[in-house]
Amino acid sequence: MKFALSALILLAVSVAPAAAVEQNCRFIQAKPDREACYKRQEEELAAKRKPVAPIDNGKAFESARQMRQDDEAVYRSINNICRGC
Image 1 (cartoon, rainbow, N blue to C red):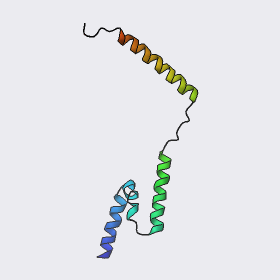
Image 2: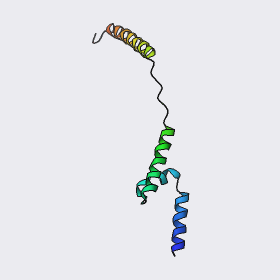
Image 3: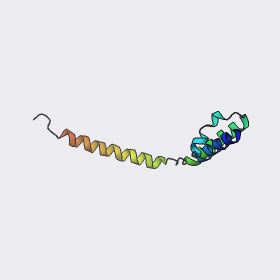
Image 4: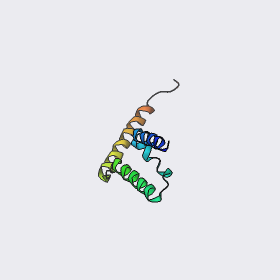
């Protein structure tokens, strides 16, 4: 009976997606195994994250200036529209 139960549990764990198994680290009773599980999750998340590209202040300033000019052009064109005529 114990063998059948353990075989069934092993089958269920092996069929389950890896992500679902790793999300259940908190249910691991042994502290070293649980901490190793959390460490694996942390490393996988770090690998999935893309490094943040440094912002070039010159480009950001130029982009902001261009947006400001575009906004002014739109506001000028809106002012020339007669509302309620």
